[in-house]
Image (cartoon, rainbow, N blue to C red; front, side, top):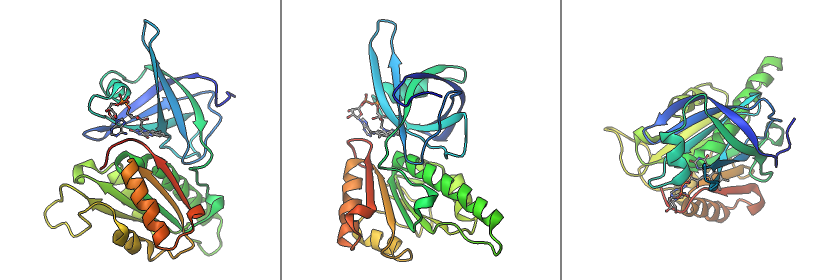
Length: 257
Ligand SMILES: Cc1cc2nc3c(=O)[nH]c(=O)nc-3n(C[C@H](O)[C@H](O)[C@H](O)COP(=O)(O)OP(=O)(O)OC[C@H]3O[C@@H](n4cnc5c(N)ncnc54)[C@H](O)[C@@H]3O)c2cc1C
């Protein structure tokens, strides 16, 4: 067992591309003490001359997986740490990290719903941990329920630049087709495929109202992504009547989607 504030060495056990600029790293962590969906970890890189740099990365995997976690990293042009992870790190490498960190931007099945998840780009990462956790707990309750109870009603509104840039696209399709109360709504802000009938603009209040409508006003909302997107979502949801204490936000970086 390791304390969350202690640095520990993880072994990269798998690397996979999610989109042309986003990659998932599976980190083997024998001493990992578990996490809650929505938490993040800190990663530290240290050069031979002692120069070191730290960045935070959300945990993408669900708490039910033990002994390893996934992080999903977008390559930022000119980015010190994200470029290193994309260009240099391969399975077998060791990375220094600590965590899990954060107790505010978390969701557990026991908290219930309905759940509104709103993300821009890589802001989907902690929300994916929540969606995966929700699916696992929904499957567990289906297995024990006499008459087949559905999972917590949940909707994910995900803003991506184009179809090729939708992170976790195939898995989101699978989760949404499970028929247990999870829906995904995409908005593609810069490039839409031929025949696209979905949203094709940045998230705004009218879009939030549409997506929120089937869930009702007792929703728990989680918004994550670039600062501008998160502020639009939080302010929009308050104007739509959600109590501020039902809206949780996490900001990743300075630019917009
Ligand atoms: C709690 C938390 C969780 C996070 N989780 C994730 C995650 O799951 N996946 C992920 O990819 N990132 C995540 N981030 C962002 C991550 O910590 C880094 O900021 C990001 O990887 C860029 O680091 P870098 O060293 O590559 O770029 P830097 O060298 O720090 O920055 C290079 C340039 O890019 C700009 N920049 C920095 N960050 C961003 C950004 N996010 N978007 C656009 N421009 C940026 C900077 O202003 C600078 O001009 C998270 C941040 C926080 C605070």
